[in-house]
Image (cartoon, rainbow, N blue to C red):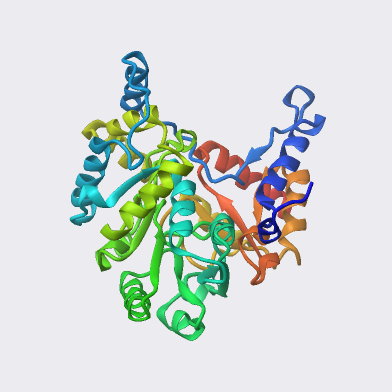
Length: 393
């Protein structure tokens, strides 16, 4: 069967290939506790070990019992948009009217909608290297061109205004940033973000910022939304990470007002609406009891970071920039191996610890870097670090 040419620009998702290999090794006798083996520890997937808190689960059950399962409007439940508006005001001191918020079927749908709404064939979008692979593939799916710019540890693995200005060309339509970032857990300094937005605005471009880890910021210096820089900034967000609702597939966009209607038209045709049950459940995320639990969990993630990063540094897996958000450490494995891909597979076999090599995240020295997810429990992290020390000794 003849495939569409756009698939030529969609690379494999290598982290899933690694996950498949990890599962195969995990099924072997070497990982069978009944035979004296060690079970695989999965630190390769970016998914919190926490699930939705009790009030959110109860709200979902109540919605199903009450028959609140029919389509919502494409932009989402008005009550949920209002709750998010209030959250921006209380958490970030921002006045974001509910009418600028569009509920989506996860951040993935949000990225697809905004890329289809803004980019045409040949439009160039500047992104940092390293960055989350799916983000550039959404640009490619809209027939745009994702141009990856090397981002070094000296620049927090992020773009700055100088890099954007030097790379900007006749075909450039905008920038797609992530703060905090997957895979590095680093954020763009607020003043640098302001300079980027101002430069892009002066070129009539668009600034899109993936903020799905913003709720999991550990440093007040960086824990600020790019939306503070003006109503023309597009923010992509999600209930998956801070709100611990990964499989519920619920996200949102904050848009300039003149983009809401075009995005709504796309959403009506492509998705109809986000999951109604998930939307009713998400209303409970903003109850005081739920927010208190999310903040407790945020503190737990920070404690895990403070456990993991010094340990990695001590064993020669250098983390050159302390993550200020998310639950990832981006570590340099060049002291131990020439290829992070081979190194990660070797550790899967010898230490039964699954990590993510840098191949997914860009083209600038991917063999040097690996991503360590500290989204798992402290006990699993301690055991993983013990195994890594033994393997690297």
